[in-house]
Image 1 (cartoon, rainbow, N blue to C red):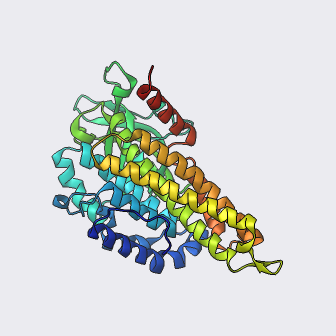
Image 2: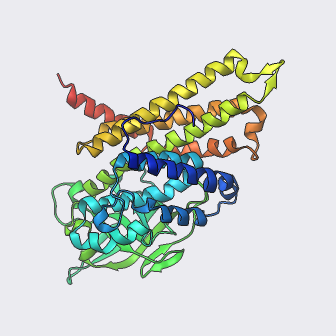
Image 3: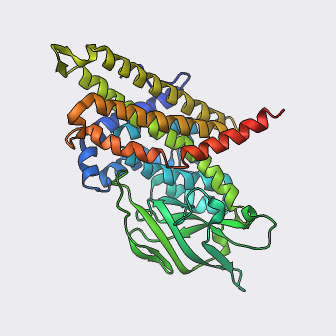
Length: 397
């Protein structure tokens, strides 16, 4: 281990968890990640191993069978996992967001029903806001739940970009419920939709068509979800009350952005490791390329960017753990970590020269994975809007 991406003030338990995960990544993820990614193969054995380590329940309270750890512990684990293979951290993240929303907003009955099984990985979560042609304009969703005379609802519409869409059996889905509130945001509700694992009609009136073929972020299944007359009881409304879905989802996205920032740090750290190792092996003009000033300066910039992004992630996580809002800090962390990750990966790619373009070298995979982090959990432009508006409030004349 080098000196980058270290965190001060961790407890012995946190250090032990990170040591265990780091060992798992070295032994179980890195040796197989590139082959699985190239084959777009779901990492079943890796996921089972993470279940045994308790990672699926890392933040779920002990009373519900989890480890009861902090957001900081979780995001540091994510950094380690993403360093091995970013797609695996995606499997965990979407599940984690659903568990977090249940912890923060669910009824006690909902917590008792789902959290113990989510802690073991028996129930696996996916998270759905986006729709075709929608992007970051969440308020413009069209998928709708209509309340019937019996008090239950019928959902119709099409959702997009569900990570774990096929492998999950519980979807937290945001829909319009138009029940007479004075704001579009108060006419949105989160439903907890149960389904079977797999593709096709996974529940009556719910179809998961299949995996979306992607440039990167492979292995993990990304899907659509088509609702056609899906019947669901009012008991499956998150928190038991309609009209609160937008705020519940934004709370989930806030911690999700810290997670994506952590993923970016993990990918950037791995790209740095590969670049600095290759620079000490490859020779040109009679000396190692690390001895050329151009490469040396590039390595210095790469290491500084990794360390800066990590510090931002740690700050955002600790702020949330203290009970404060971290929308600005989460946005800053996600923005800078994703941008720096792409820059560090591109620099490592250049250090590798022609070999970086070969699928035999790991940096080729990282180059494709890094692009996803620019758009996942909100683009850089969305983060800038959040940050800028908040700063204007703080510094208003």
